[in-house]
Image (cartoon, rainbow, N blue to C red; front, side, top):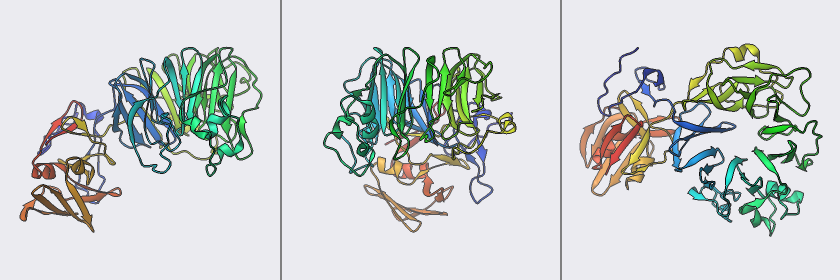
Length: 478
């Protein structure tokens, strides 16, 4: 066990060294960069291509891209499920959405097509109650109610296929055409099927499972094939489905009542049973994950082969990210990931058994959060600690504090009231109201963004900084 180092400046208290990631990330090999602790206390996970989400038990949403650090998002108290498309289900059966609204996916009857950068706070979707499950295709959402009805809203293309209040036309799927009745899609409408017990969605597809174990499916597979799927169904004993993101080949992963996993046709011979959840990988019929009732995870290839993912146990939820890449949630609330999360074409080929056997899952790491007074600050890039100095993106924190920020060819000006701070990238010498000062670590350019030392600037602006080790949170009082 490596001894913890006492940091000057912002004191970093790590609960366990196994949750600490230390590596060199800058040109100077002496720079030591620290990141936060493991993402835990999680009750639900979701994944869509390289975007991932975790829902904490207190309702906090965490998101990350690829294998990056998880960033703190909005908090929705009472949430029990959430999807990458920015939709959450509360324990009281209400549905909440947030974020952008280019396709009417917020469900409030409007779109922000002319201003796609608008970002909305979580708000309840009106007209929905007693919801027990949600699914998202990003531009549209689906909600399953306790009475076995399902509701859909968002993308006019998918909504028009599935709802009885539309007469579907191919032109609905042409983004460059407008229809006078498309605003109906911007509020929830009933899917034209009854007796629904399970739902699934991806970017261009939606599937439902009915009480008799049959499946209905709609999608936009290409400019010729769209609408309700006409592929024959060989079985009537399905309990859950998992869509493959943007699937143009018609593949659909199925979980049967007997606990076996497969596609349209049952696998020849006797299949392993006891599976309770499934997750299909984007574009890849050879890498799909199945959760067994004993808490183990298995890779299911299109030929029916099952290969166990080693190093995981007591798993309660799973997400296939790409070939040889996935997420898992254990019964202690810790999120695990493996692989590089890079998706590719549908012709990648079978996932090599050797590669699968060498997979070593690691806990997902959360980034540090910044709280200004009583509110968390949304950050475009995660804070990092370099040689004991906390760095934050140039604008996010200081603009939230009411300061004006200007950047010009590496020269930085931050001003608030009667205070003006001048800094320069890669230089430790700075000035505050004309008085020369030295910073422990110079501002620098990292991964496309300028980052600056947090404590130096915030204290110069009259604020105080403290560290909350229990939540990996930087506390600013101004």
